[in-house]
Length: 102
Image 1 (cartoon, rainbow, N blue to C red):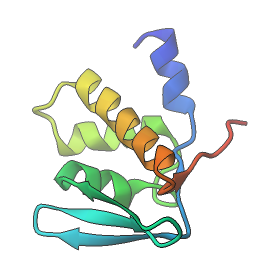
Image 2 (tube, rainbow, N blue to C red; image 1 turned 180 degrees about the vertical axis):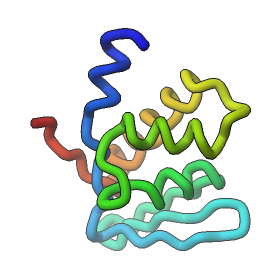
Image 3 (cartoon, one colour; image 1 turned 90 degrees about the vertical axis):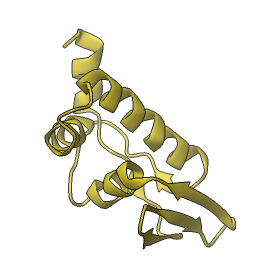
Image 4 (cartoon, rainbow, N blue to C red; image 1 turned 135 degrees about the vertical axis):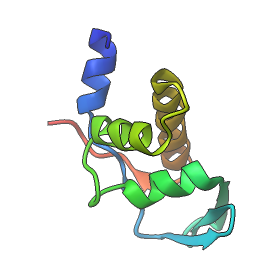
């Protein structure tokens, strides 16, 4: 793992917005912001990530380890990049709130 990957693994996961509602569907789910009326369709991996957000897991490293356990056939680097991009999209759309690093 590169130094930048190690530091990003220590970063706290964003937390779900209190105005976000999640509805699980057969092939993923939908996250709706009741404040902004923004909805975000997610596949099964996105639904898994949503279910693992705080308070379940605390850091990106925790999330990466769990995703690698759940999806052993997917390259770890790809899981990490896509998990980070997914979380960034949730924050950008007001569906998650970033947590400052200590």
